[in-house]
Image (cartoon, rainbow, N blue to C red; front, side, top):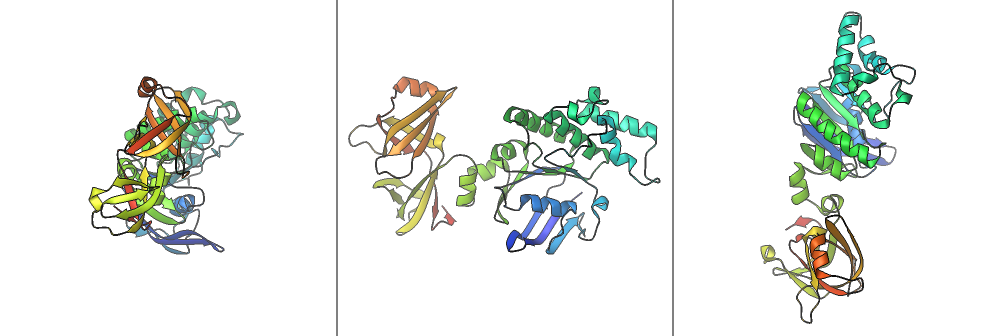
Amino acid sequence: MTIAVKNINKRFGDFTALNNVSLDFPTGELTALLGPSGCGKTTLLRCIAGLEHPDSGQVLLDGKDASDRHVRERQVGFVFQHYALFKHMTVFENVAFGLRVKSRAERPSEAQIKKKVMDLLGLVQLDWLADRYPPQLSGGQRQRIALARALAVEPRVLLLDEPFGALDAKVRKELRRWLRRLHDELHVTSIFVTHDQEEALEVADQVVLMNKGNVEQIGAPDQVYNHPASPFVYGFLGNVNMFHGRVHEGVITTGGVALDLPSHGETQDSKGIAYVRPHELDVDRYTPGADGIVVKLRRAHAIGPLAQLDLERADNAEMIEAVIPNERFSHLGLKEGETLVVRPKRLHVFVDEGTAI
């Protein structure tokens, strides 16, 4: 099924949840709606499902306006953050529920229901729990049962609202890998909402970044991470250091330090912000006349393969976070309080807080 939304607007009182949003969702792919709380991602998902009605605009399913179609007619499966399983029903009956409530003409036979449910429980690797009740299951198991129940009615679109938000970090990581494998097997067009950038970048084929009811950027995970379209996207996707300064003829000056920007040699005395991710910084001991940003090492967290360094700038501007291999940290023998110098290996600059360089 092809899914698209055209010029969707939705307000709740004075709050604009969706501001003229238009998107196409690739058939058979897994799309992540990513953004902070209140950005409109769940409202958009609920509009697609038919659980909310936009103030204006269209939801198009297979190219046809579905705005007046009841949620049951949209052939969508919906998985909520908090499972929404029936506690008084067994796992088997929870998964079978959507099949049993079909009209008599569409309802499968009991034998067909049993086979379908057991096949789905096998697919989510929980067929051995068919006779258990939801309170007897772990959070991860309950979410997989909720997914099996959504798939039972053979939806043409699968919608997931923060599906792993109520789970601890280790279980989240296991389940998102499992969801990716399951999607690769089923190829159901899927849209999931998350505020976790790592989750979106790891699982999705396409990422839609949202902010204050607007779409900031659409693209493959590597595209939005490596080529962010706005300061918001850069700041939201992973840790980042910001350097405020002036851009003039291929150089940005920040805190008295000049950093080369050869790709922007024509810019004349403009305000700019340079973004550098922690792993894009070279770190060395300071020597007089060294080229770079002078800092003091305030704290080092060197556990595992990487060392995270909290660095205080000599000009008392924003703190800088650098990440270097633990092997190099040990080789340098750095101590807290030492004066160091950092040099960006890669700068991503926005001039006038809006135009990417």
